[in-house]
Image (cartoon, rainbow, N blue to C red; front, side, top):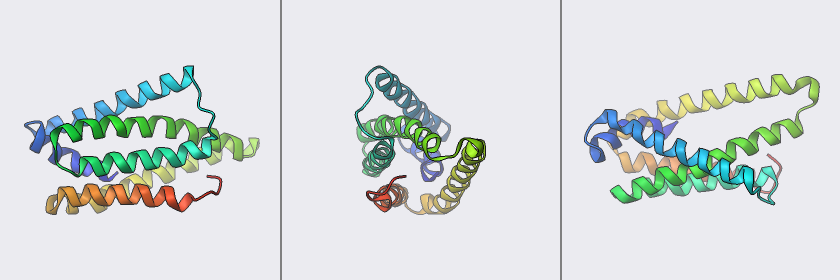
Length: 158
């Protein structure tokens, strides 16, 4: 969610208008779709747990890259962000499916979605005021949060 608060400022700074920041989301979405399409044809030999963790680390690197403030780095960052997000979400669904008892699967998926939306909103709430003060600092905090989440998972199953 932290990136969402930064997108209008990134759009104003690098794309000419705050409203153009949504193009960054489009870049991430296209690369997420492309990454999932590639993995659908050539699946990884990694457990979904590792893909979830790796996806968070890739997103952390992407956010750190965006924090550099370089236009080319920003483009690479949003594409890399999608490469981390797409497979991560697919793997997360696989983990939930594997771990949830069949009779509770709907509840587990719904609760997981609710938690994700809540965390997203909290990220935006924290990042909004911070981004107006320091855009690179906010992106660095987002990168640290993503990396911290991945490291907190450790070697345990997701």
